[in-house]
Length: 149
Image (cartoon, rainbow, N blue to C red; front, side, top):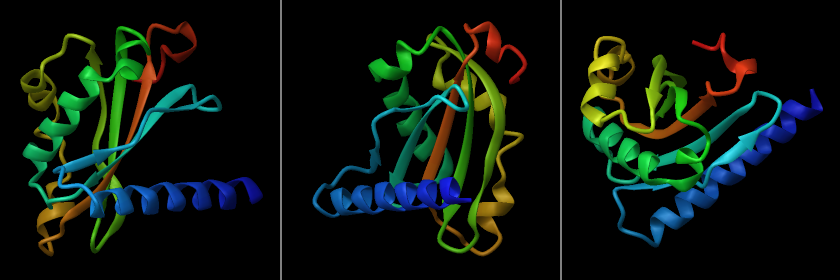
């Protein structure tokens, strides 16, 4: 219970610091550095949607930042990515399920795999805007993670 409270405080503090950096920058998105979660054997990123971008444009920017990030590239060749979105109305919900990618997967290939699974109801029911994305990435090169997909 205390661990969950501490994790919520850390997540809230991270989000607030990202929001502050958004205030002083004009970037379309702000992405945290990779944080390794040893208990789940994954890395996570938090992305703030500074300009209320539409889903595809937002995901394109995020994906392009990820594939050029050294922490992401060095985390293994084969990966599974899952993204949760926090909106202005609904709180946090899954944007798409686990998807297999590699360091050479193009955005077009990634997007073609998720387009039919994107939770558009989350976004379009009440004209919701995605405020943040919470991204988790597992390294499938590790045998211990082989059953994540």
